[in-house]
Image (cartoon, rainbow, N blue to C red; front, side, top):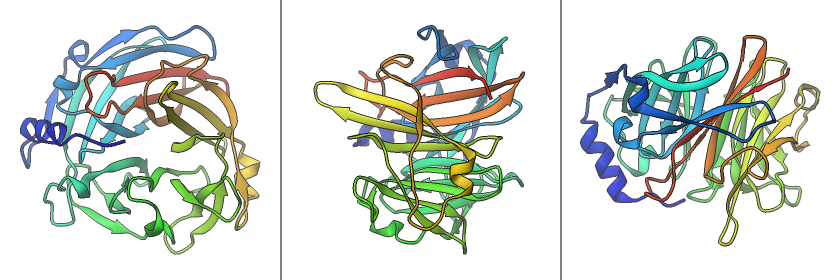
Length: 312
């Protein structure tokens, strides 16, 4: 989706270079709302873009201590603690935010800063995938400099705004990456990769017709969740969350075609917004799944977080 220059200017004005702000007012950052009953839904939060300082959130990470971190396609990051009442989200607290930086510590410029996916290594290193200039950067801390990591082979052939949207670290340590729309050898698929720097293996992801993959997260059992989205003039945004079983990922070989089993979608469990990020952890005996929307910095779109407590 196209981003407005006004939105980038707005965010830059609120977040001057070298600044990382913090607040502890959960109610001011996000307002709870109800999700349709069923499918493990526990509730949602509508984000206050003005309080955060920017929109365009895409990649998402939820830590065991319930700290939620996201990156923006405007070249920024934000982090806040997810406040739960039981399993129901009631707010965000301890907001932190700042610009993503290059290797010299300088804030990324607009075209350099189209961050679309976020993952974390066991040692705490953050991995951020970017579009337009297709690449992966590694950050010891998100408010510090980011170095280059070897990107999957062939990623540079992806269209300008359809590159690396999905990146996660699986339970076995392999990285799982999917391009939004980079045709693979098998018809009706996009290119995906397993492995990591120096050991990438190309395979394929088959989304539902007219859908594209926009994020992924590895699961404790070795499987993964993949979020898919489509947009049509008359139907607007649609999204579906799918699950890839651990055996399918373990058995993958070059050119293997993977696809997910649908868990829920905008037709039964989610508002019709631009869902772009997903994360999951084990919490209180359930698989706590969080999703986030990219509001594209537009007044008629909303920045939302949805929370589900699933079995497994």
